[in-house]
Image (cartoon, rainbow, N blue to C red; front, side, top):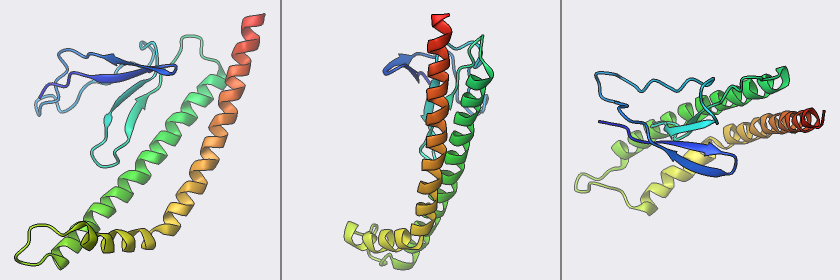
Length: 163
């Protein structure tokens, strides 16, 4: 299978970047990720099959300050934390859904209706509400920290250009 696209974001506009001769067959196992020092902007990859999140490769600018480095590393940390949470959560969800289907699937049917599955969905959400609540609290903390760092980086850049 040949992968022929990677989404590239530049400021608030999105561009399609064509990657040629990038194979994802079993022979090569995976595509070599771009070098963060050579790309001109952050790059967003395809969705992860389990977490459904898109991995971002953060650009490393040539004259990166310590503050910019801290901001980039924090963004990568938050991305990894998020990836880990949703990978674990979705794996648990898929596993429990399969178990529910095995227990509750009538012999003469191939699928349960949406109403029949809603029993599982509600039970799963009820069982995991505290986990989601804690995730959301932590997510907001991390994002406020990122926001403060982003503002500091922008202000430093603004004042650096005035000098």
